[in-house]
Length: 63
Image (cartoon, rainbow, N blue to C red; front, top):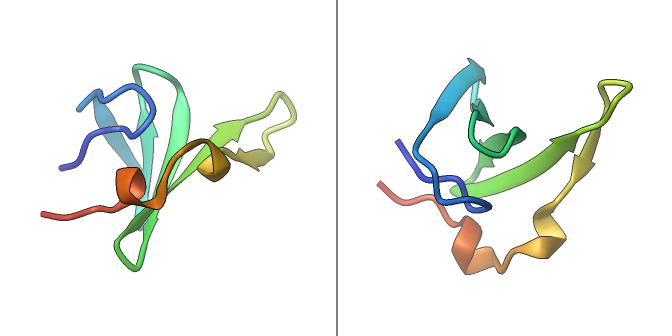
């Protein structure tokens, strides 16, 4: 498992194929080609990207 790039928590739950949810800071994460994409869930259920808040190196997923 990986750590949330936002809060560094390991309290990550799987919600779909390559889709995860951080229970500590309540953001949705997805993994694509070794990069963690971060999203904020809006009131209407849509997702807003938070990727611009992190350097690519912080979002790199390595086992």
